Image (cartoon, rainbow, N blue to C red; front, side, top):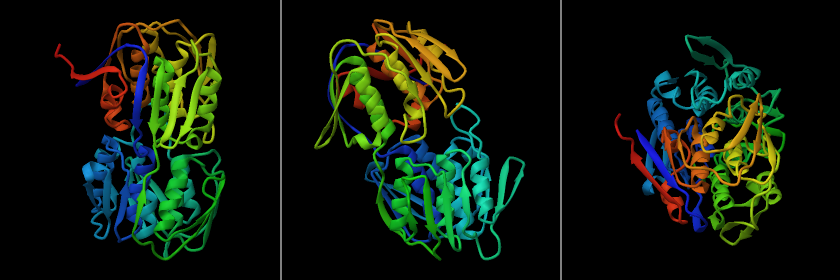
Length: 425
């Protein structure tokens, strides 16, 4: 098993290219199941989760070719051989549930195992199922699988209001509705850039969609979709993560492909903390303004609010801020598991339910720490880069699910970081 060793070494300088969005690509890939014509995705990230989705689609009979060193994915579902998404693959990643809506819409039947993923809370799929039921699907949960059937003639348009905002459920319902008979109205829909990106891709495939990026999405079903080529949107979570590197370590870094509109609420918090964010012709330039970062409070919210996927990384920043900050997590339970590891590095953090109170210290100290999930992994790396001494981060396999070439990118701006094989006990 690999470890990442980080030694704090002061200010950073240079540029980091930002990859295509993992969460967007994992949603776009199942869209191939909606058509028998080719779908090509450019600007794809090179991550283990993408490989997992490739394996899942392959098990259903779809063809996925990785081109140009993995940055282009050529997909085709012209010869489906199965409608059963097996547990052994689905358990590795929650996004696997996104094959349910497309298969049901195109072929009227699907069997999908209940998914797994990071251990950051229950994250049930009931909203996915309720939205599909509103379109006429018959669902049965049996032995850990969702058995779904569409009515004779296919899914039908419906008006469905999500009781709470759900990105994944919005994506599943949106894809299913493209081939439903009549018009579907999704109310209280998620507004994330990944939703907008999916809608743009589906529209390029012939779908009739309006309202993406707002709380109400309207889909007029069509008889069939066709092939298309679509670029994956910039990964706003990778972008925000690397924006925090110069914020914590000092210096100035340009994030290529970054846009403030992807992270407006996050950028506002950086400004409050004393971090400069400047748009450039190539992306965003980030620098710490003067002296120690100021403590600010954060509450995670659905887009356009502060992203839950940047909460762990922002907590690492607040660990060395001047003053006390309160971070409130409203999206997932169990998402403060990185806090005990940060305290091993000298951070002062108290967790009470969905709130974490962080009292900043002048500097962190390097220590051996263990990653508990994807975003926790990179938060500990950031903390190690800003700490005195050396930090060893174990269980970094989580990292490969969401960050491509993290060691190479951070080395490129001056970080002292390496990935090594863990020594046997």
